[in-house]
Length: 105
Image (cartoon, rainbow, N blue to C red; front, side, top):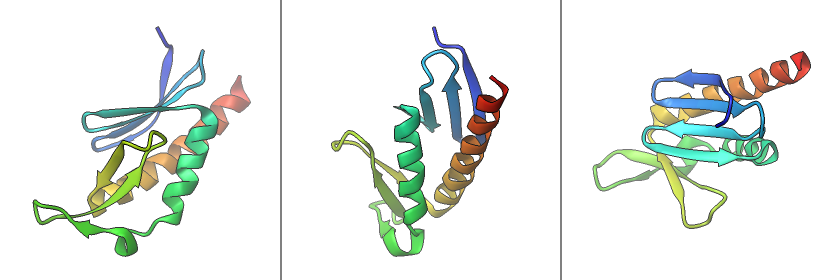
């Protein structure tokens, strides 16, 4: 079992880090995505490049969402504008917290 630390959380989005295997998990609503540290850094760079205004599209429920393809090409996450802003904040905070924990270890 992993010894996990919560790096950041806000609303329905959490990011945790396993001390032993160093994996980073993104929990959003009912979806959990695990990354290696390198993959998580690449994911953070990916979401920094996207703009909600430029990438959002209407969904059948009439809400606009932006879609982000995950490392496994058959899976995509979709975020409303509020969720998108929230995700960016949580990811940035998680990156800082990982750096702090690495300095303390």
